[in-house]
Image 1 (cartoon, helix red, strand yellow):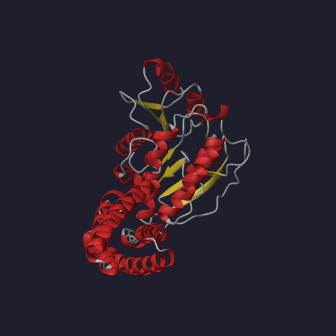
Image 2 (cartoon, rainbow, N blue to C red):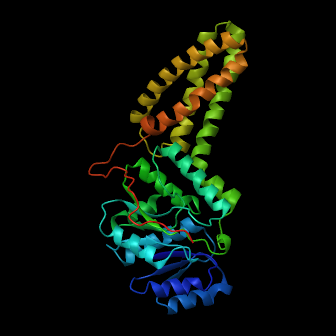
Image 3 (tube, rainbow, N blue to C red):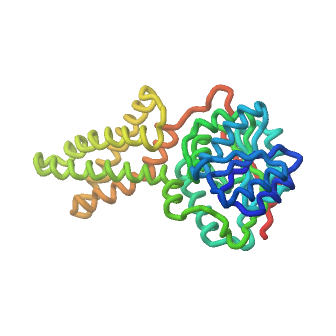
Length: 351
């Protein structure tokens, strides 16, 4: 069991005691000297405790724990749980049991969000679930759950995924989707204590980190749109040829958009020889659709600026989905498992 902990209370030692049949590794994420007694109580309850010299974030603490587990306990699966009492021992055990028998790359303990759930948690999970579906095309019930199980063979892979704070766990899901790895779900109770006051989640900063992939695509598209629109206006003014101007402007903006998306949004190592021809095919199809729609709207509305905006908005969603799945998507690795969404094997209950 791996428990990252930042400024925990006495519930940490209680959880360690209830999990005494397992080896529990606690990573103190730089909580400070005033929390030494809390971690000592956890150690006395049976935990192995690693102290970080300063607060580095949940993702860093998890990767530290994965590296230690791989080195000190090779061949052992790892189940991650939060330190604040939000995960019941019975649910942790259920995820651990499932990790031991499933071929999936990870097992998520997913909440149903029934009963009394803080509004920010309910909204945040719903928003992230929708955005994750847009980014990956996959449905995951609870993208923000901290209760997750990983088989021993995944520990090296876990260490290679970047991210130091709350965005790390979403990046794991995004990378698993990209690599066509199976994800399995186990239903767990929805538990929020004291209105989730113990959470160290920062709504603005951490939301930006979590939503960065979609925000990055939107920013990339906006940049390409700005370049495309500016060039279109200049070229139309200079040549009075709408179709030729649209083609030339799109070639320049598409090249920029491809470079940004490959490096910063989707690619991360996708080879040019694979992605470039696919992007070129998409660009040709998009350009054809762009010219047809743009010319039709310009004639109908009598405004090139309005027609351009409406055209780009119309093609935005289609372009995102195609780039995600076709241009920068990864094929199934040899011997790999497809991504799977399984119904939870336990019914979640609200508290």
